[in-house]
Length: 127
Image 1: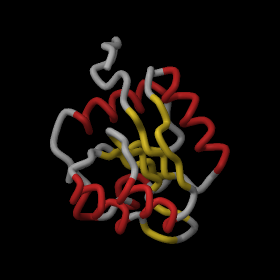
Image 2: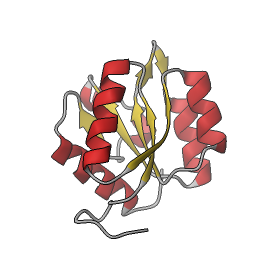
Image 3: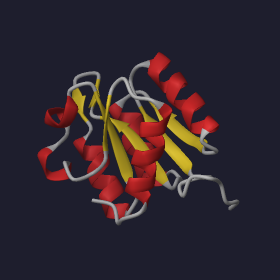
Image 4: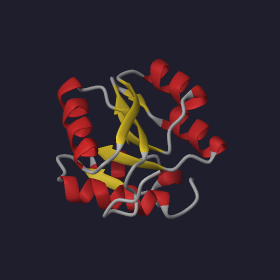
């Protein structure tokens, strides 16, 4: 792994977002930050499968996928010890209560906020 200006540089990222345009924006932001999108999902079943078997360092999770809560995916990530960041259009009230201590981005967000959230998430144990 190479060092980058950000402490989170060079991470493999799972992106879970049901809106294709937002996923594309996120991919661009992550690339700009020196990260790699290891996998992406737009639905809960695909996200669950990737969360269980994928190889990545951190996840960026939309809190609501086509009206289904992200909680089952979060539970898998916690079991695996994988850090994660929430992305929500609802602010903290959209985040599952048990996980509100995790970094949460308010949509829309800037690349600097994404970098800070990933740094914060990866600096401590998941959950």
